[in-house]
Image 1 (tube, rainbow, N blue to C red):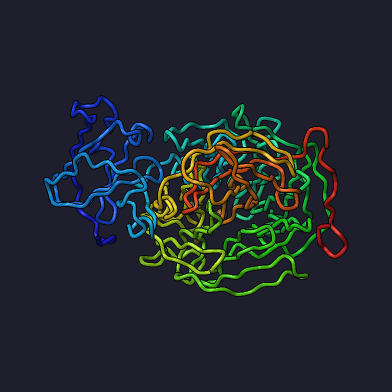
Image 2 (cartoon, rainbow, N blue to C red; image 1 turned 135 degrees about the vertical axis):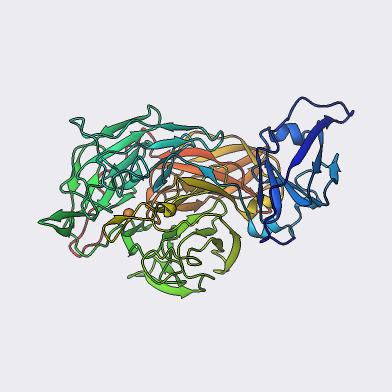
Length: 564
Ligand SMILES: [Cu+2]
């Protein structure tokens, strides 16, 4: 099957029946409206529970009215595919997810799958996954034709399970004045609220305001103002539960100045640290197991803590480097290059620990959007072999101010891009993308998914906890800090591979021993089958037990500009 050939719209009819041949009242998806074509394949999205379809109760029939191939996404990661001539049908052809139609040689098992593009009410330039599994995002301006320097913003909540969209209240200062959180930095606090520091006044000139979003109450709260304004700052969740906010710029007498006194928010007040010069906008910051904070580079590329001791910095054309934080100073080593040179791309650690690169432009300039320059093909980096693999391509340019986040169902939301000023003018409206697209990585097409039947909501450092699991045997357990992305940077992105033991009906897991390898807060816990297929995540929180309050003030800047 040629994956690059796009067919004309293809109509499908759909019937379902039970084993006795009687028409079934469920599921009855609106095929024809929910269908999409991608790369010569027609995909039908149907809403029904996987257990209805895999419980042996339902058979079904598909008829294609034009020549096509057909792919049915039954639930994330379970696919049935059928290729055939017009008028042919695949009757009673429901397959179990482990049967031959999902064999390793299917296109999707190799390259993954992009769902149809869907509209969003704004350009998702700042995108976070909340402790309730929903996605919080905001853009630069309310309307596509509005001012590029609006003094307000309306963040939205998108529910990945239902597609439902709702607006949050507008963030405000303590005196009620609205603020625009575009170009802020953000990190989750240990209690799951999102700290958003700085924002936008004009290009180069930020806000001194910081705000906190609480998804339990859908409220924004103004914090005390910072020492100075910050535009393009970085917020980093630290092991003691505080958040480090560094760099970011403001304008003084028309000149852009970097705010070079980082500050720490401890839940009550801001504490200035030692002056630290030379930090670039949106510095790539990483918490090392030593308790130090390491900066890997500038916004030329994304940078991911893919192991507590290791960082991959993916930028400078197609070059990639692995940085070993055990060495002093950290040792950088160039590894295999990506297939495509990129700038403004995103890097997302997936449920299995591999790193997905999406979007970006291969052009030589800052954000070259001329035809052929934006890269649509995704790439996947294997942290064991250190090799890259080309994956399926998305439909939309996701370059400057595009975002990508791993969702709790182990798919990836790729969204945003656009809304920048070129030569004093707003960009071409066609280059602002108020939409998103879901990527289903290859790991979802390698057989059945384990299911986490029960899990605790909270654990303490070093605690042993149990999960009840159904489905295939568990081969790996990971957890990933809730994503919070802007400007090609998930500011506190990290993964832990958790040790586990199989027991009756589940696994027993050892929580990370100490916060230097896993700062307190919420993580998406995935169990993976031996074939590497991830479950849907349970979002869990790790912190110190209530009886042992978090040690305070353990992280200070020493005289040489290192955190200790
Ligand atoms: Cu920007």
